[in-house]
Length: 81
Image (cartoon, rainbow, N blue to C red; front, side):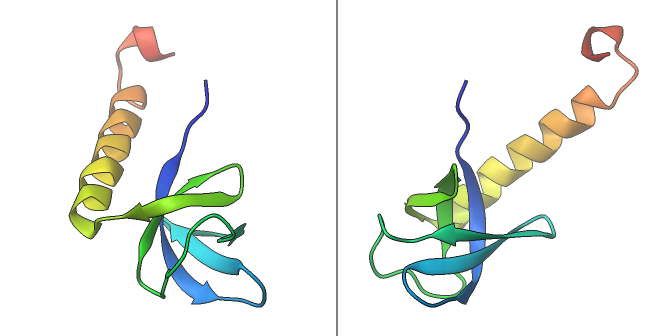
């Protein structure tokens, strides 16, 4: 299964690169596939590439879903262990 996740651009770097932040984890990615990205934008990231820009409200909803899944998996239900 492949997973693409939203991350916020915190710094534009040389070439088509940017530094993104996802819950405190920062990673350099490529913006070669997306035009017009500025600091503060959310992008969908898959294997080190931004695939497209994402509306901030949609990014917040998606990140909340990921957080909720994480809370479930950390619970006492033995199905997650």
